Length: 252
Ligand SMILES: C[S@@+](CC[C@H](N)C(=O)[O-])C[C@H]1O[C@@H](n2cnc3c(N)ncnc32)[C@H](O)[C@@H]1O
Figure 1 (tube, rainbow, N blue to C red):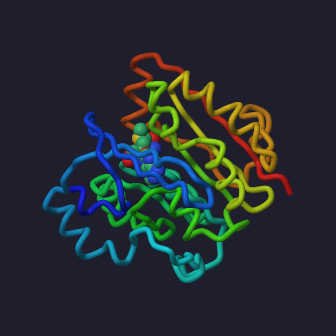
Figure 2 (figure 1 turned 45 degrees about the horizontal axis):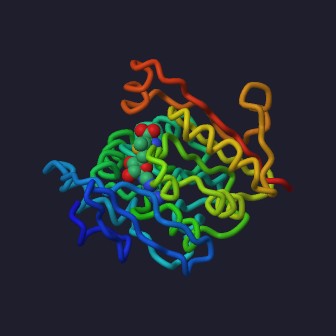
Figure 3 (figure 1 turned 180 degrees about the horizontal axis):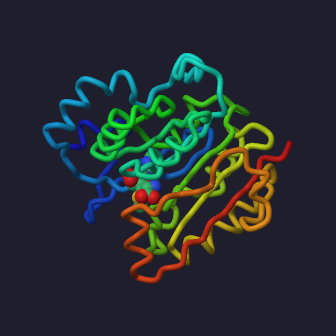
């Protein structure tokens, strides 16, 4: 992916290869938080992309998504922000065919990998949006419409001066909560201790969300919480990093 292909406007690359875009004019102002990752698609992936992306994917836009039109049915809808290579997305969609999933990712080769899995496994319940998750939620997802939002291993931005770039800020919690329907659930996982210590109280401070206990409240969650161990998470486990999981439910 080169910068001209990047769907997020007015971004600027910092010397260490990170990309941010100031968006203070937006409804939920923040500094966008994704890392600008280079990467190219393999020839087979490029062929799949050219042929099938228009069916399964779209770029971020200002047009509200119509889930009925997108999936050809009405079903509980989950948005996953930062789906990476789509390992969790595809595995969870395969065991939950009655739940529709929109995977949002800025990294094109990651989306291409997920597209490959969708085609190989004939997953009818996954669609993709290429772009910044905050833009997608703000402009493309109707308020009160989601059964779930998943954020697995968001970039931790460990340096204190970069914390403002973290995806999970108070504004984003508010935005996510506004897109969940009452009773809808946000599921977050991180292996970064410092980020976990930031995520917990920031989510708890969002008045329209109530924290669920990951051990005892799983019965209240209207979709699967069983994540497969991704390549990314596997590395963390080898290094004996602790995985912290969080669940919040939108108050009714
Ligand atoms: C550390 S990776 C984790 C990927 C995957 N969730 C997993 O568990 O393997 C974080 C991913 O989030 C994506 N990302 C970060 N900020 C994003 C944003 N604002 N919108 C969409 N994707 C984002 C990155 O491109 C990256 O692929």
